[in-house]
Structures are given as C-alpha cells and as structure tokens.
Image: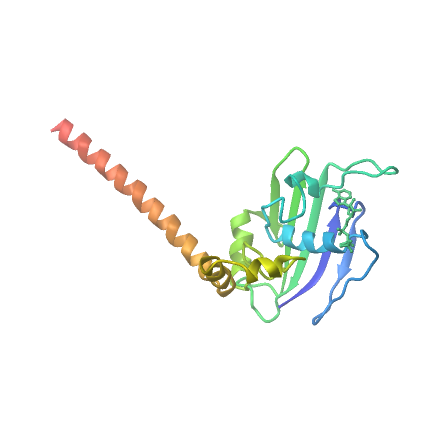
Length: 199
Ligand code: ATP
C-alpha cells in the first residue's frame, strides 16, 4: 500500500486544483517558507478524517477553506482527494486503488466518499484503521510533536501504541456495544415495570 496521489482544491492556500503524484518510497516536498508545504500535510490528515481544527493549525474547521488573497476572492468549499494504491490488499476493500474524498462547505459540514460512493466518517476511519493510519494520525508527526510524545504520560504513550497497533478500533467498538447493552437493559427494566403495572 502506498499513497499514489493527493489533489487539493480550495484547500488552504491551494485555490486551484493541484495534484501531487507520489511514488513508492520517500517523497520530499521542498519550497520557500510559507509556500504551502505543511498545508499539503494538513490536507493528508484532513482527508483521512482529522476532526481537530488545532491539529490542522487553524482556529476553526472552516479555516481549511481558501480564504482569498488580494487578487482572488475566497472560495465556498474545500475538497481533497487521496488515492491509495491497494494492490497488496492492505486495506480491507476489494479494490486495487482506493480513492477517499472529503469535501467541506463554508456553510458547515463535511462529506466523505470512498471510490466515489458517499459514506460516513466512520467508514473512512474503519477503512484506514487496520493500516495503522488511525483517527489520531500518529503516522503524521508534525513539527514539535516529537516533544509531545517524548513527554507523554505512560497512559498517553500506551494510547499511541494501541492506536498504531489497531487496538483502539476494537476498544471503540466495545464501548459502543456496552452503551447499547446499557440502553437495552434500561428498556427491559421499563418493560418489567409496565408488566407489573398491567398485572
Ligand atoms: P514553513 O516552511 O515556514 O513551515 P510552509 O511551506 O510549510 O512554511 P504553510 O504553513 O503550509 O507553509 O503555508 C502557509 C501559507 O498558507 C500562508 O501564506 C497562509 O496565508 C496560507 N494559508 C493558510 N490557510 C489558508 C487559507 N484558508 N486560505 C488561504 N491561504 C491560506
């Protein structure tokens, strides 16, 4: 599995559609300060479902939408398309190429699609979680983030390892299942109360 291409359209400083073709192995992005190198990394995290505006170096989520320049008006939507080569079947989906699209409108809300079919954020997260690219995006190490990991508490460090090992997905599913069990038990108690009243 490797990242094949990334297209940014209306995302941060990339007003016009811009596609980066990537090859297996190491890719370096070079450019002057402020030219948008980190914005490319932000786009990668964003399309994979990043939910925190701060992680994307913004104040609010809509800061990812091109805000305009002196010569160009702001845009109403941001879109990022990530194409992943899945010929080794690392992602649990029967396609040798997987395309993830995330679109956001200034009016709010994000839309996701996998291979052109609209889906939920959860579907994107589940698709990627077994590949080690989880919700918290520990595979993307930003400037200054190494310090955070080195100074993390043992509990937080365990969280990073669980995330990378794909345990977190099962923990979340367990929590969801326990919540369902809880509400079912509540319903049963109510039902019993009703039965007692009827009798
Ligand atoms: P450095 O080498 O200094 O880390 P960089 O190449 O990583 O820089 P970025 O931080 O990716 O640069 O890009 C910063 C630029 O992106 C700034 O000029 C900023 O104005 C622009 N930018 C960020 N968000 C938006 C937005 N929503 N709309 C338009 N431009 C934006």
